[in-house]
Image (tube, rainbow, N blue to C red; front, side, top):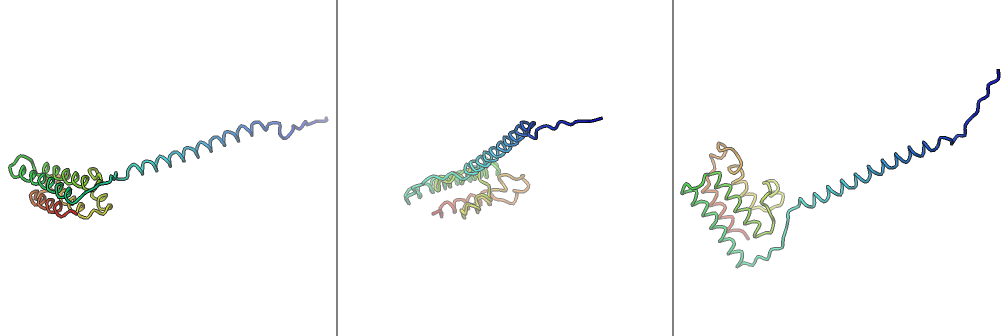
Length: 165
């Protein structure tokens, strides 16, 4: 019994190989494009997270006026606390807002949402001292802030504001 075998051409099924290669190529391109888009998005987000700076023209006369204005705001907080109109925590929260607003006005850096570590990283020496002064009483439980004195913190804040240069 004689058996014959008919061999097929080696490239007869090559269209399957081409389709598989095309699918792999499209998949690889998709992964590369996705990675590039993610990296650019991450870079853009990183640029947006940077502090917003604006050019401040602060003449000595304007700086004195701004210092007096914010010193008065801090003294008003101390007066409201002494009069019993606000609690210690509310006083520290107002003090925080006033100090951050002051720094924003004189430097152009919007520090209203910065943490203490972010402020320390910026190198604003006087501001990190102030933030350490009111940070715990502003956010911690009342028991942890019992040792803090709002009036002393207000006096410290006024001293820093007046010595700002």
